[in-house]
Amino acid sequence: MSDSPSLASLQQQFSQALHYQTYALPVEEGVAEPDALLQVYRNNFVMTLSEYLEVVYPVVHALVGEDCFNALARHHVLNTPMLDARADQYGDGFDATINAIPNIIDAVPYLADIATLEWLIQAVNKHASCATDFPLDALAQVAPEDFDALKLTVAPSVRLLQSRFPAASIWHAVTDNDGSALQALDLSESETVLLLMNEQGIQLQAIDAEEASLIVASNESTLGGIDPELLKHIAPAVQRGVFEHFDIADQP
Image (cartoon, rainbow, N blue to C red; front, side, top):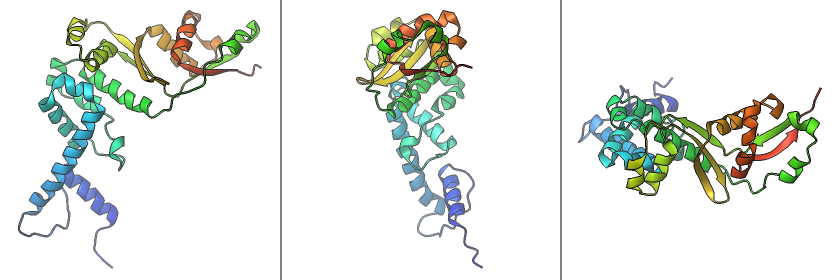
């Protein structure tokens, strides 16, 4: 029986080697030391994923600068293994990496929230725009006695972020290269951020916290099970494209 390692074992050992962990690869010695040969792969591996992180997190990159971002990206790559062979699926958890570095959070306390926001943008970007307008005319014809059984369907691209910082305003200021707007922000003001895809592309805006609560509740309940105080936010949410359609749930 052969003592050669299995393919799965070789892949695991190579992954450990790329992450500077203890490995047991059958690397033959030659002109260069085995670890020096592996360093070529390590450098390419770290550089490739770091460059992809820069694409995914352009606002984080802009806020901290090239050197700091490269250090953050390298730290993330070496401590967060790929779970998918496709590089374009990489990047989740960058906010946690940032949060775990106290001196970064001390200097830029909102940076992790911006990273969370930019990862949500990636999630929204995977959804096609819903071309169908919400059926307002049909909604107006719902009988009053059926109103409590009405179930709103949230568009699949919708994402929400509750930030204790003005995350949407920071993102827009940096994206618009508006340094004055960024400096003028009150960082003590929290924002609830709505993201969704429509015909114009990704929409990102701060909304009322109660409107966000309505959106969350609509995923779980008919209107009859939602706090009546939240129902006043149905109209603005519909105008933003949050809801795709509605159904009348069967009543006992």
